[in-house]
Image (tube, rainbow, N blue to C red; front, top):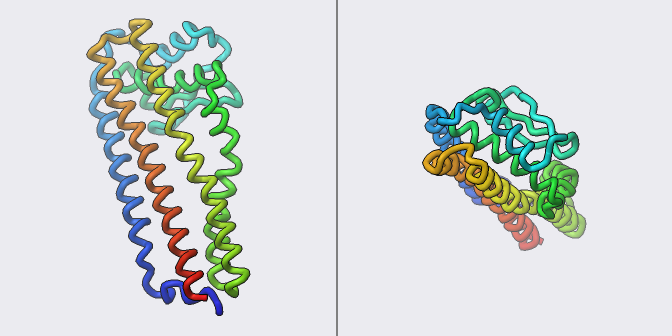
Length: 239
């Protein structure tokens, strides 16, 4: 029979997983924005801007060949391993707040990971093209499979699930990469006396809030994977 029998194609109870995932992501996003805004109002006693902190940490770690650039946007900060560049956003590059310094140090943490060949970072970079392909074609494969006959449909749905698992794996591997970068950031801020202990705690609050967005990403991806598995089981039961 055709896979059209999936939950009658009228009411899909697995949509609850999408709603839960969206809610988790929205809460995490709101939390990091509010935490950053709170500590972005507090200037560091050092008087250093985010770009100054980034350059200092990179230099002290022997990474003089890593550039520090400005990138437009709000919290669009990132480290580009391909060009060995730390890019800091509007709210970080020229700001002297504790929040800006924490974020700048975090991105330098990624550059330090790259310098030391931190395995999870390399693994995540290698996963990027596979994860992008998996996230793009997984659902089309599943949807096409639902309208195919049972023998072909189950293979297409199975292939879709396997492809989506690559995207889930990317989210999972991202966690140790981000947590480790934050630990390196805080260690550098303390070791080089860039900010005092009280300010380190504030910066840590910002980095923890940011890390929770990655945790939310993992949970959302796992919920999506669970939904795919339930769809596959329903399709099989309708054979």
